[in-house]
Amino acid sequence: MQVVINGTSREITENTTLQQVLDEYGVPERGVAVAVDGTVVPRTSWPTTTLSPDTGIEVLTAVQGG
Image 1 (cartoon, rainbow, N blue to C red):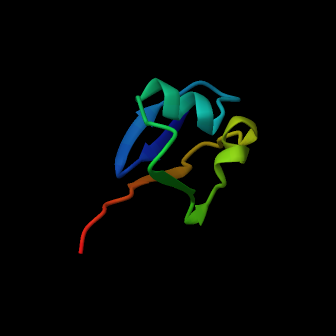
Image 2 (image 1 turned 135 degrees about the vertical axis):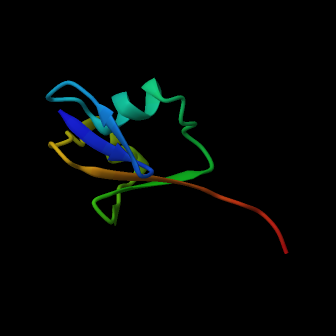
């Protein structure tokens, strides 16, 4: 099935969790926020959030500055 990660369509298997996708693409567990279909998903929910076809995933990196 297809999902969209940061605007790029990706093929994943059914019943894949958000955590599995993030691990596969090397997303660090710290310093990022992840939104699924526009809703931020708490880090504690990544392992239990199952993705559906055409889900939109946005990975946002924290940037420090002033």
